[in-house]
Length: 223
Image (cartoon, rainbow, N blue to C red; front, side, top):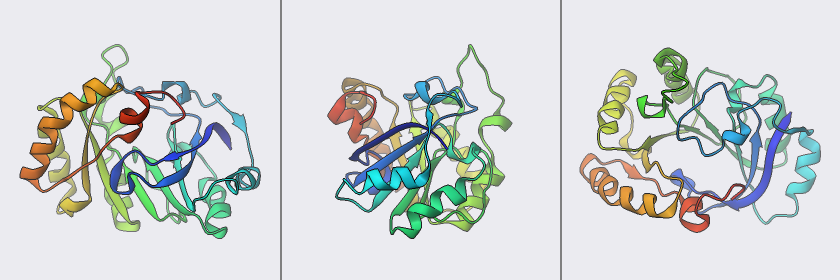
């Protein structure tokens, strides 16, 4: 598997925020989100080949049993289930972070963290059709198959209408598994957007997701 980054850090987002975790970032993503903070991992060749066994040996150095597999876009890779099985058999609790562009069955994961790509993700210089960035059928199938959370990136108040539309198309979902988080690469922007977004979460009954890596490291990669 082509690996872009391997590091140990606190999980920064979602319901497991603050949990010490090993991160494996896979290389390659078909999307070109305008606010992507890991554009260096977009190219499917932007990494080096590693076996899961070689990574597992390195993971023993860290005092955690939590693994986050992220990207890039993990579900774009063939052989993902077999790759993850090595870590699952070793007792790791695996969170898979994905945009849910397609459904993949039989993944040995503890949590699938789905980040649907709203219209706020579209780069005007590289536009992507909604059908290529938001697969409602795949999201629904993943929700049915795995323990899940939906993690929406919110850049501006207008994005809340997009979120309502997405949730309406999915049908009834548990609001406690819906996490909204501010779009921000730097600490000042994060704090500014957090204030009004947190208030909205209180009104809607959604979870407010922190972005600890932005708060603690101010957008530095590998954290």
